[in-house]
Length: 497
Image: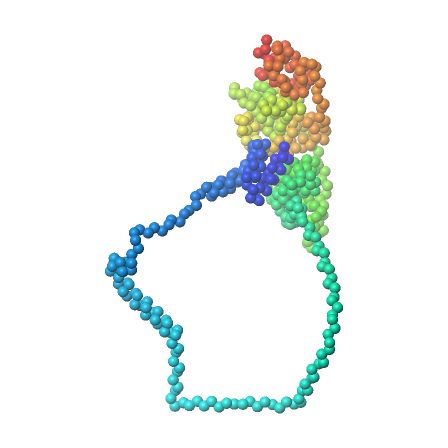
């Protein structure tokens, strides 16, 4: 589902950039349907709706019409107008018309009548004597060459025209190849945000581009190190977590997460296509960073901080419980993890769901637990969002370590995300729980089928039949897979005879 969300987000961003706002809005709505708390999808949907609403408002605005000139009554002749106008208007006409006529006549006179010639000055006689410049004699006469004798022109043999050269075919690059070529400049400039944006667009077109997956991982790690060197430790931590989402076995990101306490960023990950020229002041830099060996995953979880004590009333499923605090009942949703569904109204019981619920019952059932808050108080369903502790054991982390849950991060509640990712990696490498082989379908005993939620109380004739099916499925480790025990008291279909 995470890959589908990332792909829809990439398509939504491309829609906003290319002007396909309706398609972008559909992509962001699909993301919110899968992940209602995704902030990027919320912002993108708001942006697309804003642009589309402006377009609709402009389209709905009526076209302004220029009012037609209205003429009231019949036209008046100049004489009628002169009689009806005011004294000031009459004076302007009487004075202005002759002045206009005089100006017009003066202009025509200056154009048509030539200016008079200037009179000669008396007492001054000007005599013009023509002068002749003698031509020097020529030294030696130049003989005139005789005209050449014309020879008959023979018919010229036409020269064959060489064939036109074959034009070199122009290579047309795909959008994917153009984006890949555009990576060189931002990578050389260490503009990691631009690199991440371009690589995500490429992967949205081709998810199987292994080289780009490695570049996306390297860009997240490099950006995290850059943020760490600038003192932005929380943002750097999120970048390293995103790097592990791209490449769960990335040793560099794991090491950097553990280095954050010392605020010491590691070397840059430089791909082969970037050439680094060493400066004269420094020694030749190492282009390829050393292979970083991941630090062993801690076997002891962190000590529990100050907590709010609560009594567990019942275990709902693998990641949800109901507790009593001060005499009031609250449902608590575990932060940062997700277990397979067992009681979802629109889904069948998923594989490993009953096992996760049973392990949760074993860890917290009937016990007094400590609740730790991160940032958010509740989720959209009104459940408290908490880390649950039994003594010094965090139940959220233990379920991930044993393979009954997988990491599910919803910012801003990311306090223990790096720890959960390390434990999930350990469970995956050991093949525990969800990361083990998928089991074969369960056999049936003729009473009922325990492979999924396919019955309800109406399918049984008596309470004894329902109870037998209920106990049989529990003996196979499937729990109350058919939801026959609504009040969780161990008795199935109490309404039947």
